[in-house]
Length: 272
Ligand code: LIP
Image 1: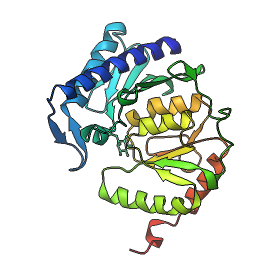
Image 2: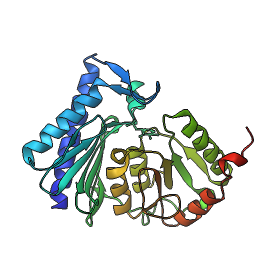
Image 3: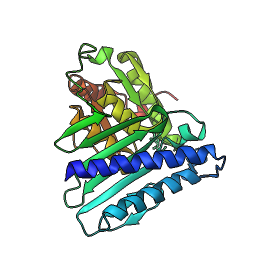
């Protein structure tokens, strides 16, 4: 069941990616804003979401759907889909390559992600995972730990990805946290799409990713891809990972990264 859901998600995400790429090439590009003047949505976000819902519904008419651009349909099958039709819309707006289509199938009874796919059209890469079966980049099985390309990271040699929300006050706090981490790790990366950054952990391209204040659609597929590859996922205190707080890391550094976050000065302790 999980593998079938993964294959359907992969086929759907690839087709949605093609639709968005072709749409952009056509020159049509209506843009509007959402939660703040910097939080944009394009007509291709909505077109991608509509396509994903209708394509999956053709194969699984009784499933539910929740999408970033407003889809919310209850189903009766016990499976619902969480969709980010373009994660990294700012990258898409600027024609940067790091945006993705993210599609996840959720068990509505338990909330568990059963399958997840993150398709990155500009890189021609499709990350896919099925709960209990593993995760893949194209045909290659992903393993965080046994990737022999590099020695295990320590916290001081860890490459850590992060992201920043759209609300200025949240960004200020996130900036302070990043300033705290920066001299204590190898370096920081900000690629601009949570789904992609989570897959970078799975592929060993970064050692960890953390962010707060995300949507469930940003992380559902990517967290499964990372954890099925052997990464450890939690919130900032070591509890279950949740969109409000996401830490996904190579197992060798997950606890130390939580300790570092815990020792970060509280907001009122920073000089203005
Ligand atoms: C974005 C994320 C990005 C994060 C932004 C936003 P969108 O999603 O993927 O990493 O920093 O806060 O949530 O809006 O492009 O779908």
